[in-house]
Image 1: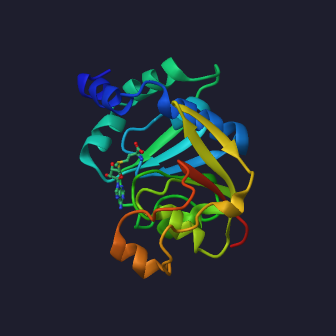
Image 2: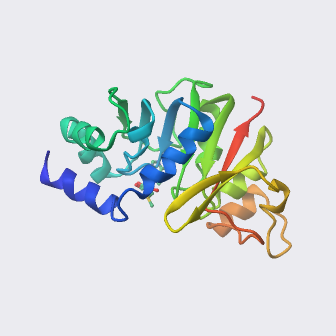
Image 3: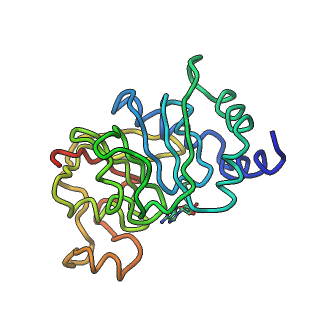
Length: 209
Ligand SMILES: C[S@@+](CC[C@H](N)C(=O)[O-])C[C@H]1O[C@@H](n2cnc3c(N)ncnc32)[C@H](O)[C@@H]1O
């Protein structure tokens, strides 16, 4: 493995096992499915638990990291929770462009700290598929106003552990300040909305085309 690959992974994994715990909880809830992870940077923890993941990023260091395919395989093998081999690929591109991914072909779309992924990549998600999204860049709010998504669960984080809950979902995604949430307002704001009852992340299910 290249030194730079190791270094980038160590930085990414500076709270050791954090993302493994997150993706494990999500995998238990949604089941095995194929994953699209736009704005992934070098977060290969999705491949520790899911068998097929497509990573997308337009960052040069991310491209360099994924170009070290044996290094990436080594990291995945070191952490993988079962003995089967994970399939992964990297697309070095802007996720706002047409990706080499078929529409309606993905079971889980991941949106963590990387902008309005739901706006550009929902087309790849099949009906019944899942969107894992956190609120920090406003994408959870974007999903909450996008027709064809329903809030299915919240992902709560406590002391580095993640739990997924379907209780009292109506209590979530309520802005602290009464504001009209629109696409334009979210773009202008460029960050998340403060909610009365916050959660680390949300799982939306795509109900329709
Ligand atoms: C803050 S990092 C988050 C990385 C990872 N999702 C995580 O949670 O650890 C944001 C990443 O999104 C990528 N990104 C932002 N906008 C993008 C775009 N339009 N197309 C592709 N990648 C993008 C950046 O290059 C960066 O690597």
